[in-house]
Length: 209
Image (cartoon, rainbow, N blue to C red; front, side, top):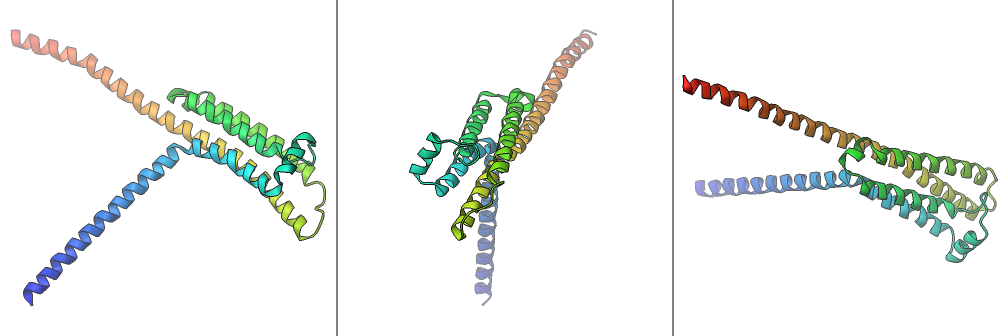
């Protein structure tokens, strides 16, 4: 009985240690995945900005209606410009993000161009929403569904524009912190290089004495 109890205790310890290793591995993988998502947030947000409004417009209209929206464009009724603005906005922001390095991401053109594109698109979407939703909804349940889909389209474009500003600001703050740490390291190395020759001279003088 004593041998069985010892074996059971050793097995339970092995199981608990293996379970603890699995939990730590899952936590490390989740942390790495989360850091990858946060580091690549501008890319993921740009892709979502290009796809989500287009998908909502596709639910609202058929391909034939989309072509008619392009040929017979009316600012007060056509919705084709909302996903087009999102695509252009995400393309511009993604190109600027790709061409910028650390210093330019910290306080350079990335944050400025992102804010300009997002604010201009927000103003345009707000003006268009005032015209589109200024008219009363027509029809029964289908009309209410169409109006709810329109609201989702405008909200998604506005929320993604604000998301671009937030992500750009957080990215600039992160790059600024990296540059600050790098500057401190460079200053420390240069200070050591300046101090080390003095100690060498002192040691040489002591040896000569």
